[in-house]
Length: 102
Image (cartoon, one colour):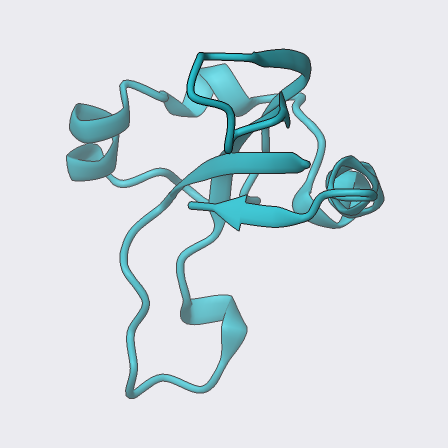
C-alpha cells in the first residue's frame, strides 16, 4: 500500500463569498511524502521512497500575517515557478497512491 501525506501553505484563507479566483488565496508551498509498506503488520514496516517540496510563486504579495505564520517571504518565492507550471509534477506525484492524508 502507498500513502501520500501532503500539506500546502497559502496566501490566506478561502473567502466563501468571492467567486473570482484572482481574489482567492494562492498556494505558496506544496510538500508531500509517499509512505509505502504493510501497515497492517504488528511491527513497523514502512519506507519513505519519495518526497516533493516546491515553493510556488503566487503572483501576488504574501501578506505580513501569512509571512509570520509560514516564514515564507516574498523574496523567497521570487523566481519560483507558478502553480500552473508545477501542476503536472504535483499530479504525477500522486500516481499509484492508494490513500491520501492531508
